[in-house]
Length: 115
Image 1 (cartoon, one colour):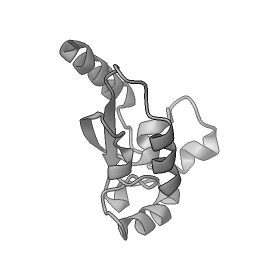
Image 2 (cartoon, helix red, strand yellow):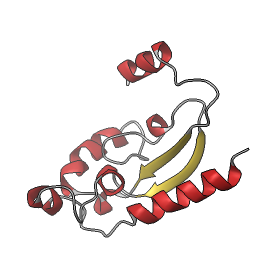
Image 3 (cartoon, one colour):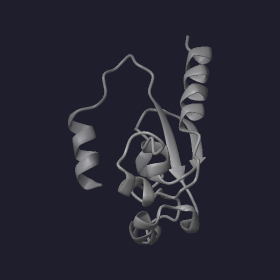
Image 4 (tube, one colour):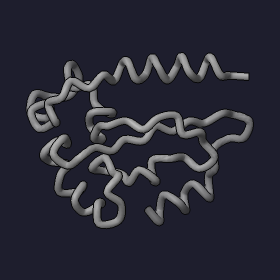
């Protein structure tokens, strides 16, 4: 966390662009089993985490918080139905998370609200 903050302070995003953040957090029992250990550790700081990031750390400074999704980090980040190897897919939450629908909704909202 300290390194991320220092890096962002030294290399801020280019000015003049709009930035958006989507935060993920889920109940422990809905997370992929391998993420539960880190989710428990992060929960000592903030129970709103996705198993890899605290919700607050998922927000880019100066961005607009676009959405909070009930998902773990892998649900949002991995195209489990076609991307990762079988072993990786077997370790995920197993939920059919609608990543593509989230992406489409994000694009529609950003385009509709652009100046």
